[in-house]
Every structure is written in structure tokens, then in C-alpha cells.
Length: 64
Image: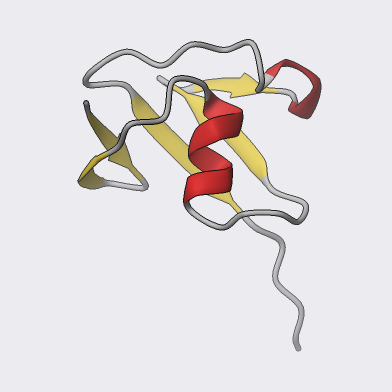
């Protein structure tokens, strides 16, 4: 299925948001939104993705 992830169209076999994060290698602390709605970490495993969903993944950055 095709999703829009951080503004880029990508193809994935992930069924849930948690699956997608694992597929993309995000194992640390990230913030997520699907179709402009914040998704808490506790609900990522049960949030089913649909073709065309817009996913935003934000990771904290350090520096100064």
C-alpha cells in the first residue's frame, strides 16, 4: 500500500503504525500523527493504516 510519510510517497506492507515504525527502523522515542491527528505510543499497535494515509514521524534532536 502507498502512504505519504513525512511528505514522501512510499510503499509498505505494514498493517499498523507500530509495524511501519519498525519497518522504517524507528526504535527510539518518536512522536507520530496520522492524517494530522496525534497518535500516542500506546495505540500505535492497534492503529490500522489505510492506503493514502498521511503519516508524520518526528524524532527529538539534540544539539545547540
